[in-house]
Structures are given as C-alpha cells and as structure tokens.
Image (cartoon, rainbow over all chains, first blue to last red; front, top):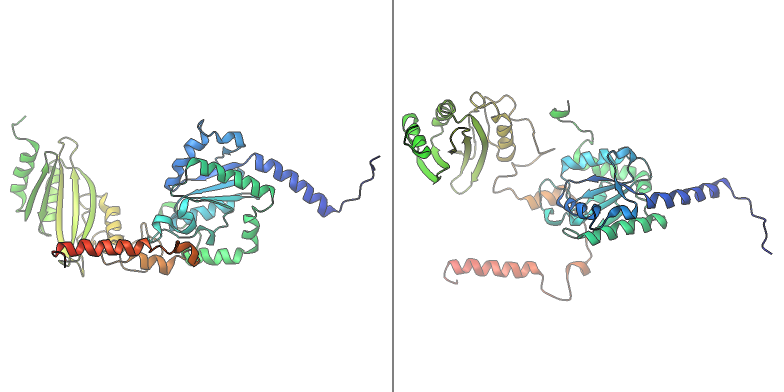
Length: 189
Length: 194
C-alpha cells in the first residue's frame, strides 16, 4: 500500500512549486507586445491570422506593455527606436521575455554597416529566443514561439533575471550608445 | 482657358523671372531648372504667387568631384499638374544657402534635415542647427559621399564576433574575394581589358 505520509516542504520549495504552476499557465497564454519597427513584422500577419493561427498556441496580441509577457522585436533598431524599446521593456511586468526576429537583431544583418542601426540587440536588452533569417519564414517564427515555450518550461528563458543580475553591464552599454536613456526631444516637451 | 499647355506656361513664367543656367523638361508633368544661387529666392517667391503653393521637397546632393553641393527644391501646384524642380550649386567646403522660411514656412524642418545630413548652413532659419533625426552625432554629415558608414558603425556599435568556423566554409574562397575579382575585371573592361 502506498504511504499517505508526505514530507513537509520548506517555504522555498512551496514557492518553487507555485512558480512551476505559474510557468505552466504563462507558457500556454503568452501575450505579445509587438514592436514592429522592422520589415520582419510582415511575418506576423500570416502567423496571427488563419494561415498559421497563433492563437492555437495560446498567443495573442496585447496593447500595453504592462500586461504583456513577450516583447517581439521585429528587425533593425536605430538609436531612436532602441531608446523607446528599452523604455517599453522596463515597463513590462516580470517575468518577461524577448524574441528577436531576423538577422538584424543578431548581428546587424544587412544594416551591419549603417551609421544609425545598432548591431547586436543583446548588448542592450537580454534576448531569450532569436529567430534567424532575413526575413524568417512564418514556420520559423512559429517554431521560435514553440522554442520559447520549451525554454520557459525548462526554466532557461531567464532573460529578465539576467537583466537584474547584469543590470550595470546592460546600463553601461545602453548609455554608451544613447548617452542617456531618457527620451528627450522637442516633440515630447 | 488659354491654349498653352502647362509646361509652356511654366516656361513663359520663368522667362519673366530670371535666366536659368539649364532647363530640363522631364515629361509633361515635370520640369527642372538649374539656377544661380541669387535667383532662388526671387524665383520661389514668384512661383508661389503663380500657384505653386506647396514645397514638396527640399534636399541636397553631394558632388565631391566638382567640390559642390546642389540644393534641390521641388514645388507642387494643386491646380496645374506640373512639378517644378529648382536646383542650385553652392560651395562644398562652406555650404551656405539663405533660408526660405519667409516664403515657405514648412521648409523649416527640411532645412534642419539638410543641415544634419549634408552640413548645409541655412542662415535665416532660427534653429537649423538643432538635431532632428540623428542622435549624439559626432562625425561629418553622414550623407556626404566621403563618409564611411562602415567605419562609423564599427567604431560605435559593437558587432558580434564569430569563430573562424562560421566565416570560412569548407576551404571555399570567400565570396568577398570573388566579388572583388569580378569588380576589378569589370573596371578593367572599361579600359579595354587592362
């Protein structure tokens, strides 16, 4: 007969169990915030509409950063858009994940020698999943989202923790490129 | 209605205003003039009164060979379907073009952009030196032909380092070398294969 006794769990273990339960629900209902500044954004309409129907994975668009789980960075970022991206990322509630689309977020892609476009996104914000390609086809995009879910399950999607731990390093890189992350231009004053 | 078509109408107008250096009829909807720098304001003011009320474009072109910068104005008329392009060449080392915001107010932002990308100065525009698009710029204007974007990018944005395995595939000669070979061959064909 099976013992009905169970060992007492420490508070830490209980928290971890709850976190795992939370992860289960999180990975099955990812809400995306789409930062569509680059051309890879054109891969999102087929992924979201009936052709590939992203909602069967439990993913849907979300209007505000505060309620979103995933930040999609679709393509190249100039210094101006990088500033806004960092703003958006820091507004999101934790846990938060970033998916980088296309070669531009990986190494600059075809804009590697541009005078305004940054080359590596993961120097400024932590990226959990890259979808390579210029541009990646829709299957690759869907595959990237499934990869993200697997990473959340295996607790490897820890970009937001890395952002906490290496905050000084990220901040240093951001300030190196942007001077000051604060948005300061005449149209916002 | 008179019997003149639109291009002839523009030509007769221009005859009254100034003597263009060059005239170029592109098609029945577009006509281009190259003017002396002093004639620009006079011509713009006159054409605005004649119906070309919208400045649709103002920019510059860099000509390093002749050491000149060409400032380009494109005007649009809502009544007559003809665009007029006015161009003028100014010195490249110290490019100064008096502002036209007294004629077309919207030129304010175009002039700021032209200053940012080509370094043309626009006295008369109170804030032509303010940054508009670029941020933290510390180099020569980026649309000048002798600006090297690759060098700037390498100096300012850290790229990703790859190990040797990724950049050299199976002992194949790199595509860059092939491209260079093709380029030198094409250039040599110009000179009769030498």
